Length: 240
Image (cartoon, rainbow, N blue to C red):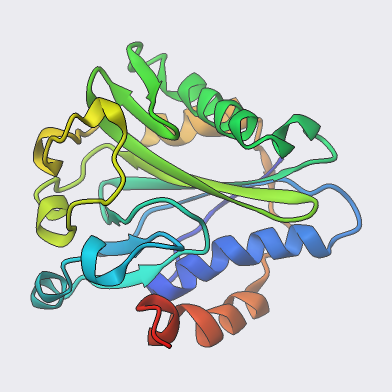
């Protein structure tokens, strides 16, 4: 598997890069898999593909704090990320992993691989709900996916030294909640992993066997997608 650790200069480019890596794989003639790790330089809210802007993001507070609001191409609820939250993205091939055409199996495969990276340092980390990772009843990772014809993109968060107060400040109450949350507010639901960034990076690379440098990052496609989609209010706010 290819490996690339790269954070772009803007939130729009960071989201565009995940989609560009998926499109690069789709456009190739051979199965193509890549692990990307990145960490935003500043806090930002990332809406899910179908998130309601006015419900899941506290836009007024985000403006006050100069927190960008962007929308990703995959599903799931809104998240807050920034320094202290390691982001991972994997592009996986159906040709190499045909079982992943089942959404349940895709969640299982990816999250169990991520847990393989984490459990040497946090042995009681487990899957919860559809696509969360948690310690006990406290969530430290949310995840989502996007499927194409020959590959899928699976990406998520790993909180390890994040300013957790930003979550209730910048997010509304999600309209859909896993049962184990039991109606708890954000501040009673999330946690940071007791694990360093360096250990997470090393563990993820080993768990995915991602050692080969990505030979040709899709820079042109990143800029095209950022300009045409991820910087546009019509996309972010779902304006008509």
